[in-house]
Amino acid sequence: MMRWIKAWAFGLAASAILVGCGGGGGETGSCTFSCPGGGTDVTYAVAVDVQRGGTSVESVSSTETVQAVARVVDESNKGVEGVLVTFSESGASLLKFAPTAATALTDSDGYASLDISAISTASAGATTVEASASVGGTSYDAEKSISISASGEDEVAEPSAINFVSVVPAGQAIVIKGAGGNGRSESATLTFKVVDENNAPIKGATVAFAVNPVDKVTLNIAESISDLDGLVTTTVHSGTEPTSVVVTATAMTSDNVAVTGQSDTLVISNGVAMEGGFEIVAETYNLDGHVTGETTAVSAFVRDANGNPVPDGLAVSFTTDFGGVASSDLGGCLTVNGTCDVDFRVQDPRGEGLATVIATVNVGSGTTLSDSIEINMAMGPYVAVDVGTTTPTGSFSMSSCKETFLLDLLDASSGRSVAAGTVISVAASTSDVSASISSGTPVLDSPSFTPTSFTVEIDATSTALTPACNPNGTLTRHGFIQLQYVTPRGTTYPQFFALYYPS
Image 1 (cartoon, rainbow, N blue to C red):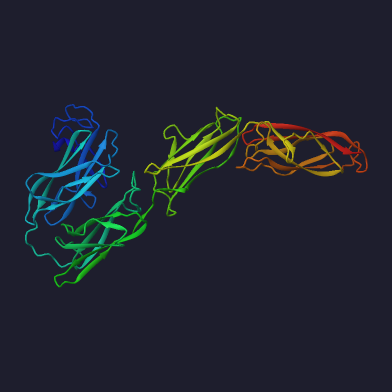
Image 2 (image 1 turned 90 degrees about the vertical axis):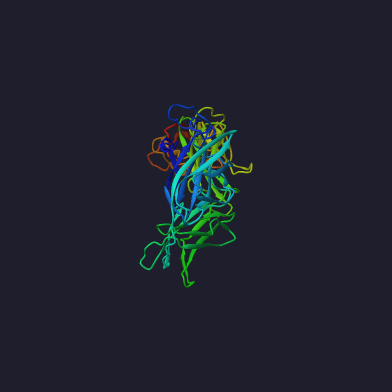
């Protein structure tokens, strides 16, 4: 069975795990992956491996403790949580299991593990570690063969130093209890190396482990015996609070002198999203509603109760009543460093031009967090109105020969703000009358969707103007001013104003 099973491997930490068939463990059973000689697809599969410090091994010393690691997956290779895995030994009786019940529950990624070691230092030979799980009323089995070499009664060299070797996962924090998931681990494996005065590895040294702080983490292996390479491992599980963790390894010399080594600091951080720690914002709130496909980024920001970004890979889903949002493959996004982005785009249905975008996050225990924003798809036409009104302005009436007018620019179809970045300019005017936009262009983005105020300066003091402006004269219509409003996507709205000045 092991000859063909080894061809079907998938990753577990730094090593490969072997995929096993169901149907009670016999070679005629079916498996999730194609079995040699045929077989039907089933829903689940079990794999098992023997590891030292996260690395797959084929042989172990009778003085060391290693780990038997099993994984239960469904037909999409996704880990199945909460499955009882039973470990056992077939063949020679060379092994003992810790805990002695030889059972463990799979975690959120489908992994279950326990410690195995030789029954005695004289144990030697080949044996097979088996893992069995019942899922959906069907039993699934996998096995891994290893060899055990006896340590004999050789004298153990005196330890001179204990060096910290590695931590898995490397280069990242582990998350607090209950926040584990895809790419997020609640436990870490730490490896140390016991060496003599010549820096040579020492086999068979007894090493005790201690963790600081003791009240916020769980130390799973309190003592271990170094292997042929002088390596010993322990594991820690996070608690419910963020903290930094240091593990100390200690070995005693024959003179009862303690030799210690200390791990690098391991950080436990990142909890689940908290109420009030989730919000979404838009890069631009006012878009050109006439341009199908115009987009703006909508970003989600998620933190935990400790102010840390939530672990990477948290799924944020988005919905909208008008326009379109997110992508076809996810309908949302996965956080990286506590944030992720989707696009909102202008398209039908547009409704009255105001879309509500809602984002939600599930944080377990039936709790869902949500936040919403509105995005304006300005439909036009754009018109200037007297400040504080919604009535389009049709003229400029000057009380002197040079005057500044304050107006509001709005979307006439809704009374809301126009597309952000719209440029206001003077397109034409009566000869010898100077007109310019002195403020308010280009239009700023307004999350409140209020109209944009802008000013127009009109100068009729030119001596070439016919008739000439006379500030003491009678107010009479003598010309025109034409403004235009151009969105960033090129939609243009003109507006004509009659011009009155005294003459």
